[in-house]
Image (tube, rainbow, N blue to C red; front, side, top):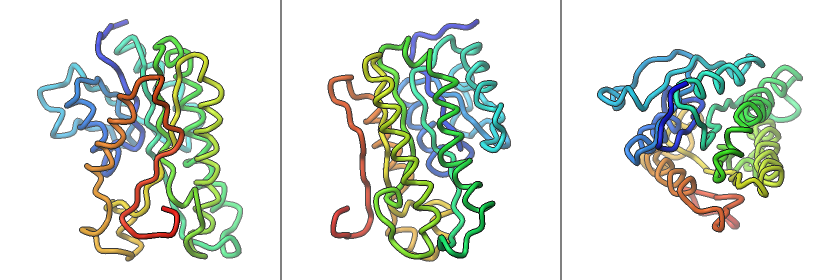
Length: 236
């Protein structure tokens, strides 16, 4: 088993968008990163830093994938200090239009897979003494913005609850969990909805800086939820 003195983060959905920016930002701050990808490939920003980057094939629909990934990362680095559960999916249907397969798909990726990933890394997070879990939820986990976002909100409300439940389970062991709840972020998924123009959305690089800040906070500055919005809303 290899050992590293720097902190190590597992980041799901690291192929592009938010996950890619989070990984690059953390690497720049001295972290080692294990990238969960459906199609593993070394990002351009990682060239020359291969010793600090681990690639893992990760499919959130595969219930065995999380343990395999966590075990591989531990074998590579000898520790896990953070999990950034970023992989997500959205099916823009009302709760009436959606069928059980639609709901099951979003719950599988947005809730069940992050829970399994944290569970797989749990002992390593506890051993860290300052383990961190970031669940990429959404402002759709705080309110239902529109009828077509209703089914997605169903899964993201659960993702917010997951972060709170992890926080409760690990607090005495130094594990801190945060539900990060952005509104529209300039990613392929958000831009496909034809809402604000991309330049008026929160940028992935800015969200990555926020996530890096949350991961850097001491145990005594625990943040349970962090809302980020590009639009003016009554509460967010």
